Length: 160
Image (cartoon, rainbow, N blue to C red; front, side, top):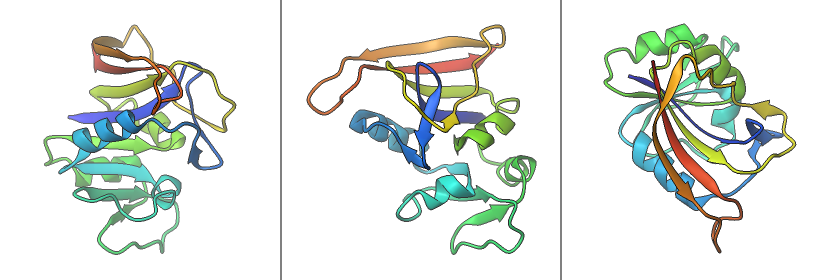
C-alpha cells in the first residue's frame, strides 16, 4: 500500500522556504507512529530539511542529481524507481515535498492528512484531493490548546 502522509492547511499550503509553517506536536507523534518501521520516500530538499535521517525507517531519496549519495539511505532519480525499490514492502509512505506529492498521488492508495484549519502564505502546496477519486475513511478533530496554536483534523482518505 502506498500512502501519502502530510500536514496541509485549508489552502493546501505545506511550507515555506523548505520549512514547516506550524508546530503541532500531536501531528509529529502521529507521523512517527504511522511511519516507524517502514520505507519513507521523499525528495532531496525534504530530506535535507531534517537534522539527520529519521530513526527506524528506510529512507528513499529522490533527486535529479546523478552523483548524490547519503550514507544508509537509498538514492533514486524518479518516483517510479522509488516505488519499484519499495514494492515488496507492505506499507510505503511518501512524505514530501510538494513536487513528490504531485508526482506520486496517482500511485497512492491512501492519504493520511493532517488538515490544519487556517490558511498560510507558502511556496509549497499539497495537491488538490479530487473527491470523485478519494473518500474520507476516518476523521478526528483536535481543537487548539497550549501546545497547538491551530485547530486541526486527522483525516484518512482511501482511493475509491
